[in-house]
Image 1 (cartoon, rainbow, N blue to C red):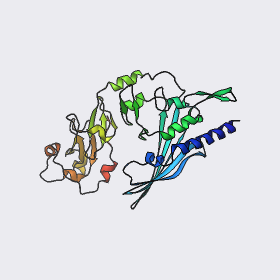
Image 2 (cartoon, rainbow, N blue to C red; image 1 turned 45 degrees about the vertical axis):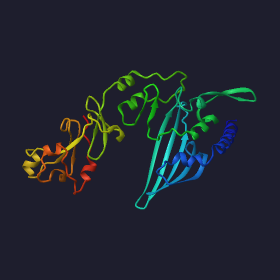
Image 3 (tube, rainbow, N blue to C red; image 1 turned 120 degrees about the vertical axis):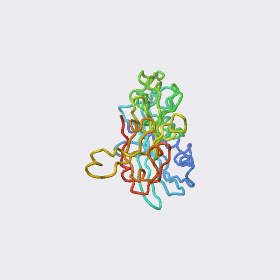
Length: 312
């Protein structure tokens, strides 16, 4: 009987997809940076290790082509959570690459698609069989395929907070809803979430334009670059040589390492080793570098790329 119900659901779902319109899918999947958008396959049920509903498009832009496939599915142990994956096969004149990401969408009262996905009575010939929820409801399937508010960056909007929380922020994990059973009560923020939202954070922008959130204990987390918009409180970095009296310089007669340091604490928050060329310019002193009088590196930057920021 379960197979019969699934078959009926799939037929109904396919019918609703025709009403949705195939031309809308490329517009959902490809942003305005692409000049051409083409549907490769409409939403369909795929069976493998799990059952998932997928659609695929081709996005073409000045730099090359992207074949993008999106799927959504559900795990039985988490009724209130819809998982969505995105796979990108990228091909340009210079390279071919593949990217895959997975996102969780936990449904709470008031969220988009909550009413369409919440448990509802399933009847057969007027007799109630059981409650069904999530992707077992045709309304839930249709709602998720039509959504245009999915960011695919693991961020989420909280009306209770009044802003969107992005992956990397300290509060992102503390405030995120937990997968589990459906709740019919309004979202109640945990105490750790409330405390985190009330914290004051600073932001640090490196020479390579990496943006970090810095808390009161000098813990650092990478966040979107938009967090490092120009302001009087934004922490910048400068280049400076290490000590000439280190064991390395005294015994091996080599030049001190060159560092990129934060302006606020001169390295207590942020400190990485960078290419020596940044510290070798004649007439440029450490104090000059602190004022932003830096040079462009002409050497090998592999050391810089592999370095990590110190987190304290």
